[in-house]
Amino acid sequence: MAERTTDPQRETEHAHPGDAAIEMELEAVAYRRDRLLAGLVLMFGIALTVALPFALRAGAEFFLPVTAALVIAIALVPTLEWLERRRIPSALAALLCVVLFLVLANIAVAAIVIPASQWFQVLPERIGQLRETLAPIVALYANLEQFVQGIVDQIGAGEPAAAVQAVRVETPNTLLQILAASAPFAVIQMFFAVLVIYFFLAGWTRMRRRTITTRSSFAGAMTTARVIQQVVDATSAYLGTITLVNIGVGALLALVLWLLGMPSPLMWGGIAALLNYIPYLGPIAAALLLAVGGLMSFPQDVWFALLPALIFIGLHLVEANLVTPAIVGRRLTINPLMILLSLSFWAWVWGTTGALLAVPLLIIIRTIMDAAGRPDIAGFLFEEGTLIQDPDEPRPPPREP
Figure (cartoon, rainbow, N blue to C red):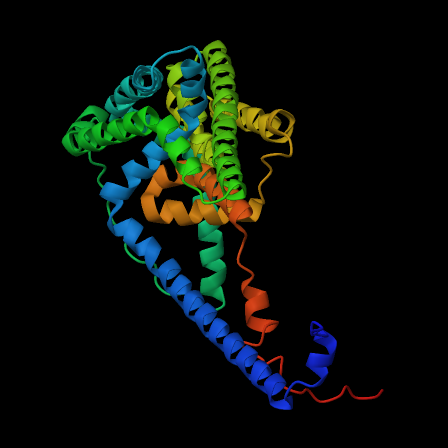
């Protein structure tokens, strides 16, 4: 008995004509279902994006120390791995990393806070000197204001000047008293953050191995390992590089201020180094503080008093345009617009601490988004038929010119 051979092309030709229509209908239904699910996910994502900032701001007591601790812990991972390669147990290596971080942080805080408390104490006494030093500038502004007001009165658009109100300057509290008022809550938050850093580092190797080995495919495991390594490398490289650069800028500024005879040069160098972590706004704030400090230290000469601020501006311009680009290179180049948006967002959510965390968080989010794939919202809305007609529907022919 001869075997029956089948020809797929012949069976396709003799297939029922309705099968093709049913198949097209099923594809259209599947397409609409996928579009509906994608639309629901998009709306959920938009709602989550809108609600997340308010949740982070309302829960700042919890989210802020956790986020700061995680960023610091990620930056300490290379040191942890270096210690583990020397056959140091993970728990002990994590403890050494935490101790090293706390020692450096306490040295930096002590170099800034202790001299700053003395400046707070002498601030009421120096207000009169500041008023005398700035008297020519204030007189020039007052004369200019009177001149403008006279012109406005002459053209008949002016109103009677309001009565001058007496302003009484209250003696501010000392910095130590301000810190003591918020010390208990701050100590609890810092202790909680230190615990998060320690347990994150102690379980880092085991957690990374479990995350990679639990992937269902080899490609997924390799992708996960690559993303984890990229996040660690990018974050630690940025924070390590910026820390070294800021320490150099602060040390050089402190040396120059010491040569100028300005009191507490280490404090001013530490303030400049700390504020230099905040892009754009930090150096401006540091220059303003140095200007005030210079006016308090050298009230006899206004131009010499502004010299510390001008020197810092020069150092910052050299650092931002020559030193940092030469060290960091193009591998950590970030769009300035994204930096400004991240800075304004996190500063609005968590204040000054959020501004300090803005760039590291932007680096982490960008690294994960680059690996996971960024959603093409414009393509979803305008190319796939969400806001236009279905691509399966017939379209009118183009007009002839």
